[in-house]
Image (cartoon, rainbow over all chains, first blue to last red; front, side, top):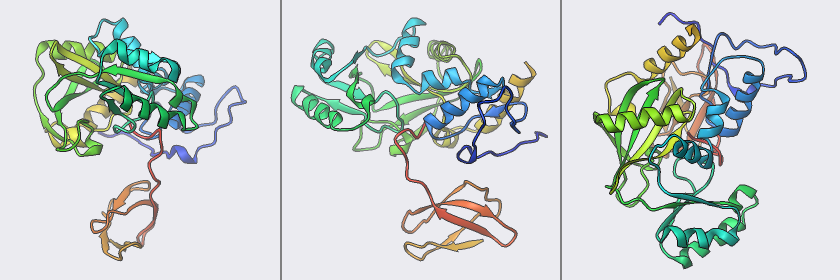
Length: 261
Length: 57
């Protein structure tokens, strides 16, 4: 594509933020691919502060990295999303679950690859999960993102978006002994062409969180499509295996176009 | 290029265009390594970091 690129390992960066200008070699645009949410977010905030363009912006990274923030923005944009309550301590979790009706799904506010995602089928299981979470030192573990269990086929949908364009659409089929559909957990992928309703919902979801290069996750519920997550530093090994389009090329093209804009 | 897995001593084939930061996985035992340096004579590997709580998309 004739571009000059520089691979920067964010772990090796120490940036002087006490100056008005940042001494940097970041070029015209930074394509953020840092695997650590917090490292990526902090770097993004620094880049933002000094007017260095990044894909995606730090605001998008912040929203997509926190399921509570994502859910609120999706709901505000009128995107169908699973009913979700946030219990601000262990004292209010049972009430939240009772309101939704068991089984419920507990997810960590931040995190990926299905880690910490669990189903509580009854109050006793919920109690066990809460007890384990309360023993962890991280205060984020002491608040609870409680979501209704969505009845769906043993698959979900991952659609990768760059700006206003859908660049890849796959079903992620859950492995045999797991209900979660993360490729990191062994889910397989198969490509498909989304219908108009799904395409519109996905693009609206991407816009709701601020736009950019995103992975929108959706489910086929009893009441139609529902979007449960939008991913910032979207991984696409599974999606690439199921589609002929070069996802990386599309992402780079979008990144270059963003600079021209 | 070839390197030896320090866990199981299997030979690992390293791509000739390997980049610093790339992950190499031993096909025999699954141990993961990170390319820490690329030189004219080969690569240097170090054990890959274990996934932290905030890793992933």
